[in-house]
Image 1 (cartoon, rainbow, N blue to C red):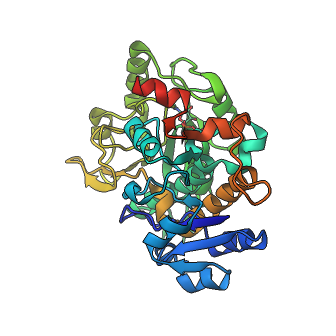
Image 2: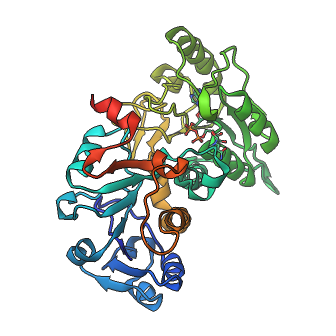
Length: 374
Ligand code: NAD
């Protein structure tokens, strides 16, 4: 079996799907590994590192021509180069882009998307790329906030007096939010967290952060996720938030609802109530809107009131070494299941493999993706 590692098509994406260390582990199992020239360079994994690990570094065309399994993060921009029957493993986002699923099927690819993983199964945890990447993003969010903030995060006692610690609010206490909280606390900020799930509030309490209490409802859904709030609940949440947000120097938002648009949590009016120099980081920022009104993906703006708003939806890519290492481990865990004896065996009776398979045999086979296409 030959596994191919593609250079990410998106120019700003710095991660790579497999590191030289990860590749070495495949080589030990006698799997051939082809790596596109430059695939790891933006994460500081040089071609020579892959060659030393026993990989063959080749041009993109040869990766497509000679691989049985292709590894990527985001969907490659040149799917027409793929061969029918090839397996593509990535974070393909088919629920947000069902048309892509259709083109994957049309290309005859067996497409496996790690964002479809049933995350609560303990057997799946080593493959949980959403968690590994959210963890990196949450860490970087706190650093980004500290860098943009004009003051210190910690309380510092110096001969010239004492500085007060930054007050940081983290909205959404899932994987990214909890890591943002831990990181901001390590930097010495006073951190408050907020979530709509009871389990998340328990997690919050265990980090030592304060918990923001708003008179909004509990909103648990299946699989440990949050459900979308009703219009009335969302309105009450926004009112409560507008009162709370101006008390903070830094707000980091991470709220997501699976399969839905990210909830709006911080309105322009709430931003306007913050002190000049305050910083707001929106990890849920999308072109169609995120948790913060007016946030623009990958862009830093300053409101007329002097509040810095940073749209930061792909922070994992900005810590590319750690993110690629973690992602590569997730991929290796998946490959161990997909290639139990070195050959690809797609067992669609397996709970995990059937959940992550988007297309196979020329058809979109994932029920939820199919439903979006009908
Ligand atoms: P996510 O990215 O879907 O959402 C981030 C957070 O936003 C969640 O905590 C969610 O409750 C919160 N949120 C949604 N709407 C909100 C609103 N209107 N206001 C405030 N907060 C809102 O979540 P995630 O981090 O991917 O994972 C969600 C949870 O699932 C995590 O806490 C995690 O512990 C759990 N999980 C469990 C496993 C497992 O059992 N192995 C694996 C992965 C995740």
